[in-house]
Amino acid sequence: MNELLIKLAECIEFGKINMASPYPPQMKGQEGADEITRRALEEGVPPQDILSNGLMPGMERIGVKFRENKVFVPQVLMSAKAMSTAMLHLKPHFLSGAAKQKGTFIIGTVLGDLHDIGKNLVGMMVEGNGYKVIDLGTDVGSDKFIEAVRQNPEAVVGLSALLTTTMVNMEKITREIKEAMPGTLVTIGGAPVNNDFCSKIGADNYSPDPQGVVEYLNSKIA
Amino acid sequence: MIHEISYSFDELTLDMNYLSAMLGFADGVLPEPFDQYVAEAIQEAQSLCDIRGAFYISEKSEFIASNSMISIDGIEFGIGKTVAKELRNSTSVALFLCTAGKGISQRSQELLKGENPVLGYVFDVLGSMIVESAADQLQKKIGQIANSSALLISNRYSPGYCKWSVADQHKLFSFFPPNCCGISLTNSALMHPIKSVSGIIGLGKEVKFREYTCDLCSQVDCFHRNHQRVGQKV
Image 1 (cartoon, rainbow over the protein chains, first blue to last red):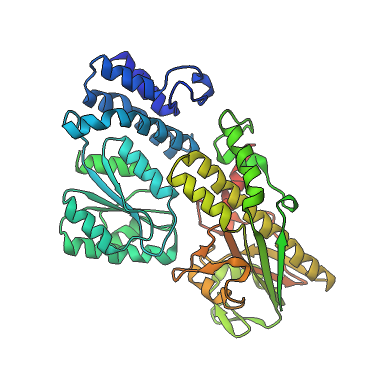
Image 2: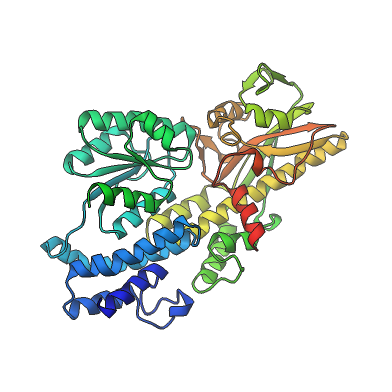
């Protein structure tokens, strides 16, 4: 594999944003995701290869480490920042069709709930694994989810909740999404929910961590 | 009678080992840029925070029904069997709320959504530490009042933990004037500012304070459990 893509994957995994970034200490003074992505494009590496063989493997590795409690939230945020910096270079290629994302993921924290760190982490991880992410924010009701699915009929929907009082809203939102747009897949997550609750409310998947969402999406639409 | 107290940032005890560990550096050595982020957040938090607490001690509490409910001044709380067992020997209870103020929550949210999510997360963890430390101070104050009557206090327990429904926040808040300490409650029982804590403490001659209570609760990701986990690492 292209040496640059191996380095790029490493930058994403360890959150090395650019040359100026002092983090991580062992990569201080080295090029980061910013410079390497730019260089790869200049050297003619296809944008799709940069995404599939550079950025995505790095995000997958950090996702697995997070699931295994080997890294904490800030390390994931650093990786996501490195990823988004690289993506700025790739964006024109997505628009021109030279590189394609795997699919679309619509995510939001359900009505009544304002917690968003977990939801943001899932969004970043999913985006870093090659999907277009539409983040509807917090306190989101059925109407907003349904409208987003109407505009992106192939999208999978992710619902997040952190409170036992708001997880109950997942049931109504899931039911209304499926009534309005039959066949739409709904995955849920958040501290109070589990597989049993997922089955009970008619959602299609529960993941306890961001990487689980990526794996679910890969199994369904990639 | 409602007792209200304000705390300055300097009155709180913040465990920097916990902060380092929550940022992923259990050895306590923060690399760049985390060292600057922490310094910046601590510096800014001193002016951002509006740390306040309030408590109410009821003499009219009794356990009722299925050993999982308590009636406080005639209002019934479904505290669950675990909390009820811990409070069983109480002769009175204190209800409390406290907050780090909206400033630190807002700053954290802005950064998380925009320019610097990592710094936003540092503010978020720091906000949790501040409000828990304020709750420690409040608990200490309640302990002093209890001691003056030769009583002991239990640990503090909050709606949302140990199978005590978070919906009971509404009942708990009904003991305090609206917007007490600047804290309000949404319909879904979410406190505003987010960095706020509420709960109950038992008082009595026979109540026990436990050093470790995470084994009572099934919540896997909360401040207390993380603190215990980190304490074992550092």
